[in-house]
Length: 486
Ligand code: BES
Ligand code: MN
Ligand code: ZN
Image: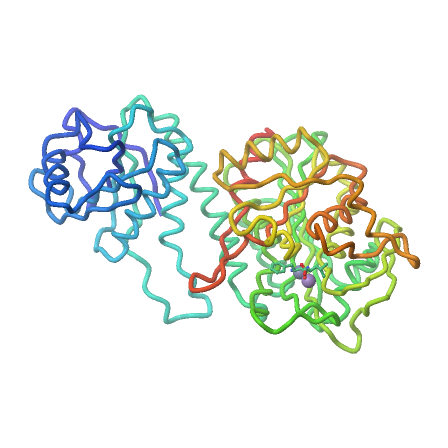
């Protein structure tokens, strides 16, 4: 995909050359000042009952009179926001998906506020969403739409802002794409070793360091909690360390930690069979770390970023960890494993301890951690957990900016109560009530040495049902957050 800004000339929209022209319109009537042929076409469509100024309504016109572009689509936007712009674009792109157009021009009319950087990013994101097709294990998937070149048209004064938005947007979109592709691949393809080779490949391509540790080396590091989860599977675990060095070595890095359970059967505490296939998406956190590292490596900000991925399968077997087993984490704290299905926190805690050695400015872990988070927030907001108000504010701001919603959840000490164990320093599960919070409280016990936030993406990393597939979230949020910290 290719995006560029183009300055509108005196000829206005009528002079725009493209296979297709998508015009996002605001307001409740044909905008005043809309170029003549366009105003006539739109006005007539309204009179004929073919178009209404209601959010995301579309009108497709082929070879309209007086218009240079071969195809013209009008689509109504709810308001001037980037969010409404993106929704309108999604609707417009859907109308053009099966068209023969390869080049698309996009413009917006009928709003007082000018387009901004976030609108430009929204265009790239909408195009990325519309054009992504999973085909790695489905060669019969429909051919990709021909659309591949996009131009965002606006007044010349917006060139700098919109060009920057398109550029950032493209890096984020390739990160999102990588995360989706990785997470969509089934468990027998996207193994821990596969994630490691993806990381290595990316490191080579973009010139950042990647280290991969195998089971023996993970033992040597002392990640007893991580290994307890890994021991039930014949698939070898991997611990992946990626280092993007954009600033002086003395500058404290941001560390991202991704949960990479490539299949979560629950282990001995086996999950019920329904929808268990979706537990291949339990490496969504890891996928988002890969995607974010890619976006960052492409944008080259002056900051240091470490990406950690802790990856294995959670399987039942004669060697699998059992309820009641006590393991020693890298931190030295012992853990009584009361439920082997609460495995995410068991692998993350060791990676969080490992993160200490980087003396991080901040650590953010990303995990499809709890079904309880889905109950609490549904599929729109990811859960944000942190005791650090400053870090919370930065992540919330990045989330708004990137249109990748998160909602802050409580993390008071009272929720730690349930993690008590008679046989270890802590149990791996607390009360069922507030399960997303008790999971976060468990992680918190390993993060005393640095500012830390946890993102529970159980409800947002993938979609179920007919549109089943990975979303690539929260790559936009993470990338925006890192850029905001430069
Ligand atoms: N990967 C799951 C969480 C999950 C479940 C995400 C459903 C998305 C949809 C996690 O490892 C898990 O199994 N968590 C348990 C924790 C419980 C045993 C305390 C859960 O949420 O049921
Ligand atoms: Mn589980
Ligand atoms: Zn899991």
